[in-house]
Image (cartoon, rainbow, N blue to C red; front, side):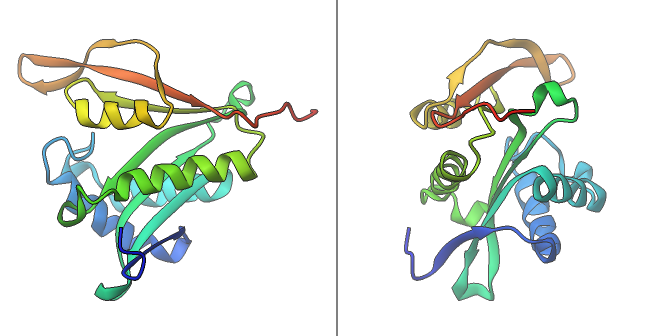
Length: 181
């Protein structure tokens, strides 16, 4: 990654429009996101930004040569019940189709996991779910330390009578320690 052109930073509320545009773009690619283009709404994007900023983590990659364009984003956040207070879930990553294959997704994941290890010792577990057919992503996640935790058979409706499995995966923070209640 050319560090003169791209940089990673924490997301901000003001990034909303650029993140929304990124998600619309990526959703047009089959398998780019679980949601189809018509399911990427302003409320959906505002909701995950708010949750990530309130009790999770969100990073973006900015292309400085293209008017500060956000070309990639990753986020995850805590689930509601307190029994899950040690978990970050709903992990989603989106990389602009013109920038895929350049290591940006891996860079975002490494930034996220490093941030958790250094700043979030209250987080023990980070969860994601990957389509079984997305073998390239699953391999990346495994290389980053995520472990497969099963197979959710016929969870994804690919077409009228065609289904595939979702693969739940988790990464465990080696620097986690229990915070007193």
